[in-house]
Length: 427
Image (tube, rainbow, N blue to C red; front, side, top):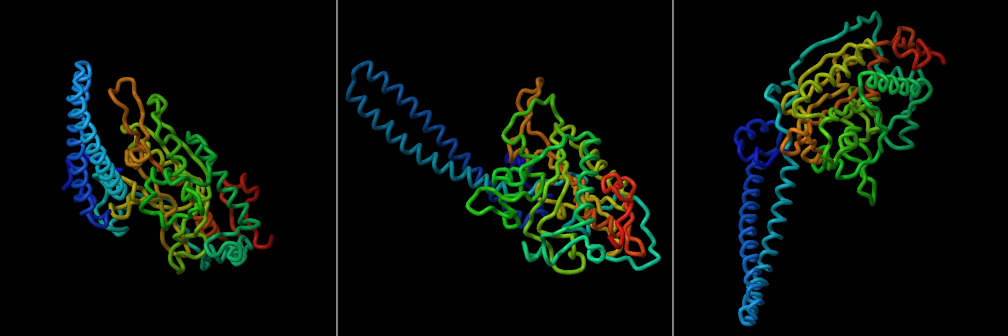
């Protein structure tokens, strides 16, 4: 959530920065106008309270003088003023709710170095790593490989839950588990604390990260409950310190967690969304950092390097791009996407987003820190990123390490987790 005072003072500049991130910049004009109305009512209410308090003092004086006539008249004025004040406070409360609601729908302000543009066409490529394999046979897509090696059962999964809920078996289940454990061990060795999280989150938690109210239609809500199935571990990890004041000397907090993630949007039909690339349920290992404002740029780079190192250890070619203003997520101020090479598509596809949210989520979730030398508590900065999306890592591994005979070579770093150097064609 943005600071309403900063928004008011820099309205035109912020409108320009958000023109590719917001459906209608008039929302900014509306929230500022509504806040001015709230402030006018606040001033009027303060005047009424001051007048009421003065009258109450006069009542006390009149009682001391046993002036019954004055007491009666003064009490009538007090009661009338109190009634008017309650009406004002009710109106003020409505304006406060309106301002909060409109602010909750305005996305974060992009950093100055974020590419200007409305979509992925304006993204800026920053680096490439690894050599793209030159196959001497026609590479199969991951869904073909999963089928040939009996690693999944999409039809049986559909009978259980419908389309978009994978059922992995045999080597598929083992490879998924191996990747999760490898990623967690890697992240822990990089200095993060592992957290085991609830897989259901409240509307307040989702509001704190910016998933609600804007993206409610993409969430799976539990009927007759305030709970939703977790769309990403980011939600629970970020909300660990919701409505808390943290000892600044303990920062930064660096967390990692595995969780299944659930989202209604599963993409359009077509080659790029077949198999495990875009589904309703997927496993992800997440990174979240909570830090002081001055630390967040360095923490962002550290998080990016942690995620990149997983792909480097696995020997999977990838590139890093900085997302444009219009392509970034709602809560992000700057986002790096890591895109892994998929031979079947002959292109790179997103496998992780690493984002600095600045104080946007902290304002929504009211996460502050206290420093001994500071006059007042400050909002923390929060960052999050995938390390990595497990299903898409499996997709990349299967496609890049496939052999002509149909088997899959396993990267050396993963052998101790899978307890096999390959996935054989006949198992």
